Length: 373
Image (cartoon, rainbow, N blue to C red; front, side):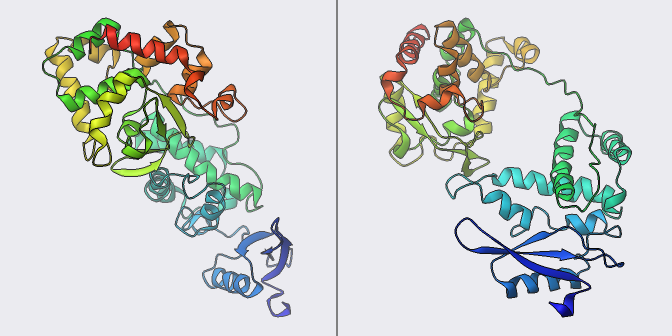
């Protein structure tokens, strides 16, 4: 590579499967060698073409003259080095990142981060600049603390990579804590409220079935929409995906689970899966609005606003009810799919069988009788 001596040097590293990946090192104008970076290429020719393309676009040298915009160009785009590396830890059935998450990352970068930092030199971004950026988002962009925190987490993905890559010398987000978010907590329906809702003549059959499924299982709306013939069994629902904004995607926690159901609930759901998905093309928003209308008709509107009652409140209702029926917390977490991290006690229920959850079945049967369904 003598002809590239003053721009870059290629070298390879072995991989676990016996192959190799090519890396490159660049040089400052003074001839000082910088840290190595992966080309993600398995052949030297492909690696050379990769580096030559970066060189033509002025993106090869990661020194003090590189702007944030140059470094972050196409960061979350399909085929980018970061995205390839991130997705490599997932599987085709369970991608490491959902399309909705990637869409948010791309939006954060394009609409908020680049407009502020694009022309600023990467090495010169300081914590004070990041704080000013946060203030700009709040005051000029009129964004909520939660949205600001999301954008900051997207920025951190890039700066953490730059720090590990020796593209910057210090962390510009160092010491900057997330903004306090005053989330309005969603309350759970009481048992009396649940009885009133399910006995209401205002509730349509499809809305009633979706709501009772949520009340008995704690499943999210996106998970309920994913119930189909293949994953509905007499004693459980084999939950592997969710339907989010009309698209099939991995579950929120990326971990599949089996949700216990009693015969009464199975009998309700079985006739609905003849043509595939139980709820077909039902719009989640339609069910949300219908539930809200039922609550209004029952003169519960003030409570709905005060306690932020909504469809998701059934998840809290189920959680509270199962705990009140003395179902062990670890089993409640396993049923509802609460994310507790690797190594948690939930892992003992990976090889699931119905006899592991007798308390849950008993609680569901009791609930259906209490609701007079």
